[in-house]
Picture: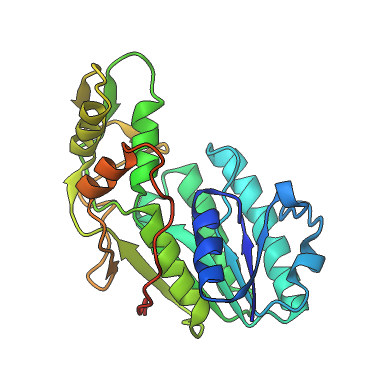
Length: 263
């Protein structure tokens, strides 16, 4: 079975390609760096030739609302049209838990449009909504200014990118669900508490300031805006263990696969 991973050179895409190859699937990691552009359509038909499964883990290069909307609309329309033309049997996309609740954000409006385009495409599909990645939260905190870090104290149930890639690989190996499912980490934290742990781990002297009005992609979070529903798949890797491992030189970016249900 041929599986094409759109965004195969990105944070999740690289891990997903590795996992699928471990399971002996024929995998093509497609991205602009490999000559495949979902926005312009360059190389897309050739990449999808003979593909049974497409997994879209790509993201907008810019996260502001207008740029994200342009990206996801253009890419979504081209990808679904190309997948239909190629006879793709299962179209999978990675989205975000809380998308429906965060429509005040232009970025989340763009992600909702991406989901809607897939549902209206006529393709058999599965959409995986994930909670925030440990890697993303840590990156946001570390890449901040020299000033104190102002962040919402809203609850979150973050997850490792490794576990997200594992859930996507399980979907790719299974039958289309024709619905959305969620995946989340095993523990709930306040975003501000996670940020504090990251700064402490990296011996960063800046302070964390918890502010309920702090914007999140332009939206204001409520207490449970980022939390998954009760039927979410719960991953194994705890934040403390991930953070400890990430501080080690040469920390591995993959781990052995273990198959499981996402339905």
